[in-house]
Image (cartoon, rainbow, N blue to C red; front, side):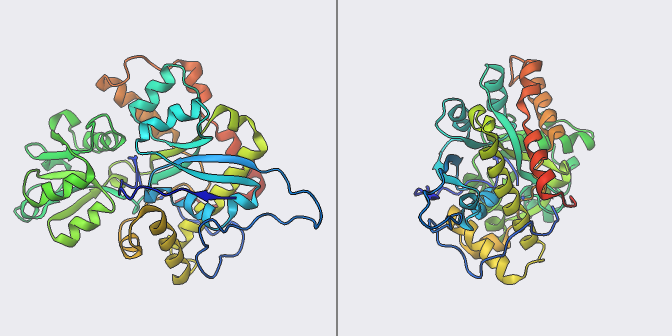
Length: 376
């Protein structure tokens, strides 16, 4: 059965991670419960009376308390993993960079993988994993990570677009330019005729950016939810532009499988079916297509797993994801080239390893069974 361990209440971005933060489609299947499911009380598949219970495949999923993991939370709490015959367990991590090595050593079967240098360097060193599903894509209107500027500067006519950033002190999460948020920012700056090296950058965590913006220590920052909402409530910042506007449909984070779990095709496809089903229901709730009660239930599920309150979850800009579960491979490769140019990936990923990285053929098999839906 699905087991939920106690998660730290650290409020990390709805992405990297980094990094983002979850398109438009109807729910894929199954009725929506009238009330939020109790954690740990997920329904099991039906069985014949007197028969031996079917063996269940254990799936440990590396997790941080991030709102962008919404499809996983929904699939777990509504019992979709259990219905697919999976013994699903959330395994908490405090450091996202440790997740990929944990796949290679068999500590977990699945984890999120952002396109940051740590993931690419692991791949270059021979660490093997499969990128299978989209977790966070910055679709138009769903940029939960955004450029913000101090309100007093904005009111004075400064920092109103990307072209205004040179000369301002802009914060990015550690390690600064070696983050996927910086990669998306660089793409936006390029269209404005600038490079990320034209900016004065500071390295601050999201929680530290909020007081630094309030006291004037920094001029702006690439800030993620729920911290954008908190700073706006305080009246200290203006949200200038989301990363979804800088690089539309940018994949901030994906779901990766260990090689052994990916090779177990029935179990791997079972995860993908449950995940896509939950992701479609999440998106339908965001679009208001399933009613206020369903949206409230989704908000409560996310709140329960992140330590946020449901009102904040409802108010903040949500993450997006591909309703067919397919990652944006182009944006991941853009970041690979960006980090290579910045010197953060000293050794290139071998061509064979790059080709073997993508496990989306599994998703295509699932889509052939359950059908595709329109993408935003």
